[in-house]
Image (cartoon, rainbow, N blue to C red):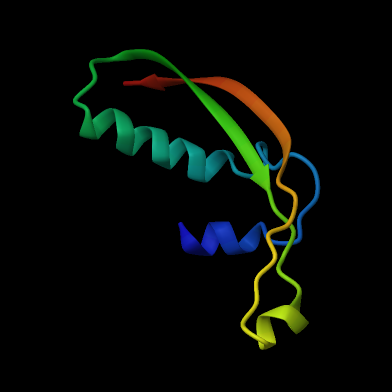
Length: 81
């Protein structure tokens, strides 16, 4: 997960299509963990974006939170075999 999250840093726009493999994995884990029977299940992908912290402020141990935006929200379905 951390590798995927870090790979998105600095990206622009909606990353849903690029993230499909990890989203498929996460939905499979969710369905398996909850013991869901075969069928179609709906999920919502909401992407939040916050600018990277200012390096000068980080060097002085100060953090100013950037404005969070929502580049996209996508509803999608997966099949549980």
